[in-house]
Length: 209
Image (cartoon, rainbow, N blue to C red):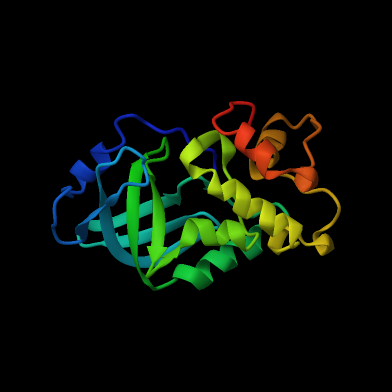
């Protein structure tokens, strides 16, 4: 679940896979407003989940071939940190072997497609946050995604998933966990138990994470 950086040319992945913005095998179009917030129709990719890599990454078999998908705007605990395995299990229960639709955004530096995943009417990205299995990924969100901050706050207040008191007093965000492990200097990290929706929204797009 390494940190991602959006590439402006990310849509090149669709071209490589032979996917059109119009209806083709493994790809349907939607007349709804795109989650990208620009008002154009959203391309929707359809496929079957063949593997869950971790709490926010999966592999989908499209008609044109396999595609690794990183859930957009959410960040699940690393496997090596508390609740990491539980997060992967939660995603597995939602999507393993299922037919899903993906609203693609762009490609990250690891050649994964960033996207919003749906199983039927369920928004998987939002569901993981609301269940306490993932975070609103502040740095890589837009203001239009602020609902994720609210869902995270509700999960925290209800002590769901990673927010359960049984998990211990301090809750470390995945981005802090990765940063701490990279520096290996024992850098102090923020305890997000006292986070609020307002603080989350204020941090959207900030590079401090």
